[in-house]
Length: 168
Image (cartoon, rainbow, N blue to C red):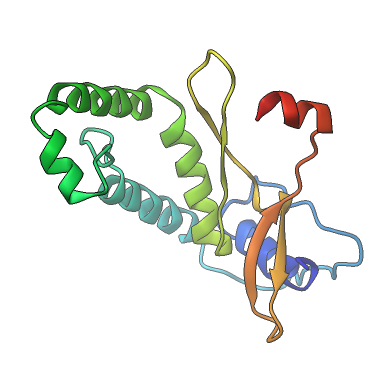
């Protein structure tokens, strides 16, 4: 159900990231090439993305941690598991810092700013650390509710049944 939104999304990309090609679906209308937009839009998007990343998920600070959800359990095991929890959180911080998480998130956040939605896929391979990939907005599908408001965004993924069983 992305077709009604493609012209607007394509315009947003064209006037913020001219070099990015937006693949349109069949039956989409052509964009009005006579529209004039402010050429500072690209810089504004980059600035907003950079500041959001810096404030929400800073690369130099621990912004995510493993904690006990149950406060009673936390009190019971706090002393016993303090060192293993510290080590686990250190590993988590190192993972985000040394993986491609920030690059994928930055690319996806740019999509969110320009088009209003974003998707980050994590790739979990055996014997390898998690890897991340920003899914381009043109690869996403939109689902509208009864009021024609987009309320679900998803991506098609193909996997053979035997691979699903092996993987999970």
